[in-house]
Length: 320
Image 1 (cartoon, one colour):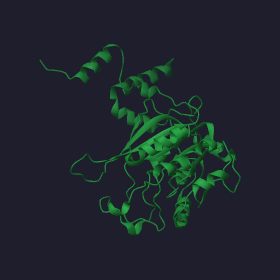
Image 2: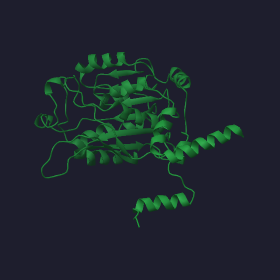
Image 3: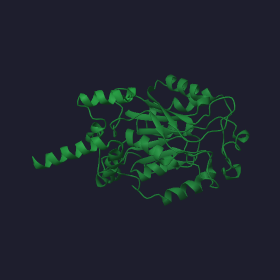
Image 4: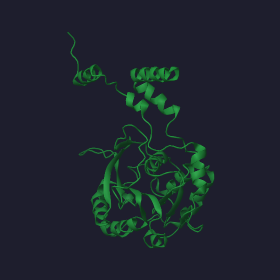
């Protein structure tokens, strides 16, 4: 007599009760969804910012620069602040060639909590009641970010873990191959969240954007990771703010995803690279409605039994 695993037993019990794994995912519909034409129209009609700030990256310190942004005008914040670690000592481990890091890249030398408190304390003034803020952090300064967020009276609604298949080799501890993403809101009753998947987990997997022999500002976030933040927490035409633009990733994704952007970057030598990348980016090139055939196709492979039942139900709908 063959033995079944606990998971197989649970699946059998679920099926006996009429539950089909994955069927709800096929039937799921996002809270909000727009065709490309609808999204583009929303983008074209958005004009909340003066032309001097709309879709602009200002090359100055964000802490002083944020004071010029109209209060309660930002829909979404995506911030990946400097690490606050000495990369000179670990560049060989990260396979990072310092000759490709643009000059004038500045790390934080002051107390990291004091630095975090200065810029995070200004976020609530810029945020609408419906706004959210995704703040990226390594484990080394996570406590400082959390303490600064609490002091600013932001509400932490998710602690997301971004994992990737790379880490520095270790001998006496586990390899660190994850990053923290803290999802803060100003008002935990009114913040905008567009649930575009049936079961959105707080554990995200994205490959790191590792491209050797390319000029950049320190490290670079993957485009699809930034897009995921925008898809869940903003609408087309919304204004996305990034206080540490770095390579301009947030601006690039915003343009390609039919969102507006504004941000700051202290390193003026990055300006030609950012402008070149933005010129190469076609407006709306990353935008796709959330309900599409590609999503059904991926679910079909994962839940073949649910797919058959779903298609059968769809066929019955057409005949009734």
